[in-house]
Length: 158
Image 1 (tube, rainbow, N blue to C red):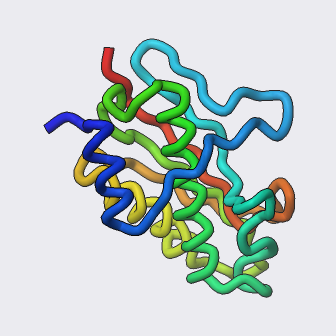
Image 2: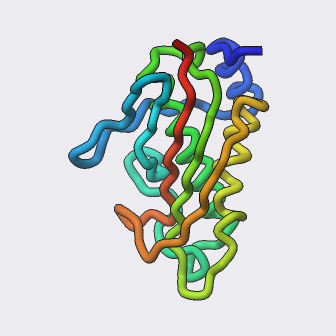
Image 3: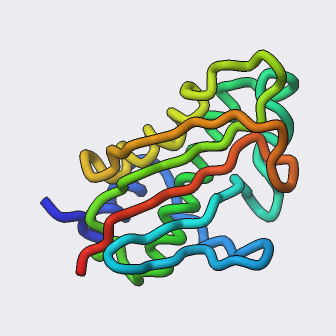
């Protein structure tokens, strides 16, 4: 069954989630590029009311569970960017790829657990069309001191 805007917004409500306004670009890039049936959403830093969610390094001040919740917020923002760019979730065929960057302390190795926050959010909201290939990558730091950054690639209906 194709993704339908009304179904996605109803599912968000059912989950107690509200789609935030699409966040603006924070530097010299665009939030989303659509080309030849694919939409690339720029990396999303989890923010609420202009503040970074759970800033710091995972494993040194930020608990993995808090980082997973931040990754879920970033994935929700990515959905907002997709809807804002495409005008509706009706144009989304499926999520194809998710990359989750984790600002991690030395020795931290549970990157997949943090990335699950984003992955689970996408599946909870979109069902099977939210299932995707994924990379979870540990890094020394991220913009604005964020503990995670989430980039999403989606297939778009013609």
